[in-house]
Length: 230
Ligand code: DC
Image (cartoon, rainbow, N blue to C red; front, side, top):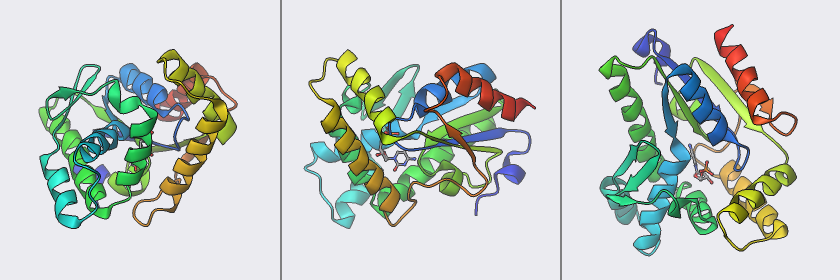
């Protein structure tokens, strides 16, 4: 067990978990900006791995997955994401990478590598002494990666609301798609994420549940800040 509170003293860790398309990224990024904390998009990390995995033919044997984990270098630079020195910022947001990310994230070995990398990112920033906390968003931050996080939020909304939001995002990016396809893919991804054997998507017992279907982005941010700063 990783004892964040003891290990990090006054450094604060905020975990934001939830299903796909719920608006986690917007909320987590804005929260990190407001608090001047490190922002870690762990979904982007899994998406980078999925990108590499696809490029090597989607192998499933232990050795290939180990090599994938060891050899995939992920770097966040300002608003860009680089995977093995390639700027993959836009490419990893495609629907096809969304599906592969959900598939590759079910392998225990891959989850182990990701957990270590996520903890390392936070530990490096903590050691630098320049930043007072980190906001991490994903599926298992409050349950597995930082189970002793100072604040845990589980953001949720109905599949229909999330599918409508995703449709708008993809249309803005010029991807050809339709609502029914998106809804079906989203429900499938929810099932995969919730039912995998290791670190399934679920709310930590001590997480604060936030329904983003009833609130807009700024109301959610205000609510989270209220919980953290009170
Ligand atoms: O948050 P996202 O949609 O960018 O995540 C893409 C996929 O990565 C998601 O379907 C499941 C996986 N993921 C995960 O298993 N654990 C995380 N902490 C973050 C993402």
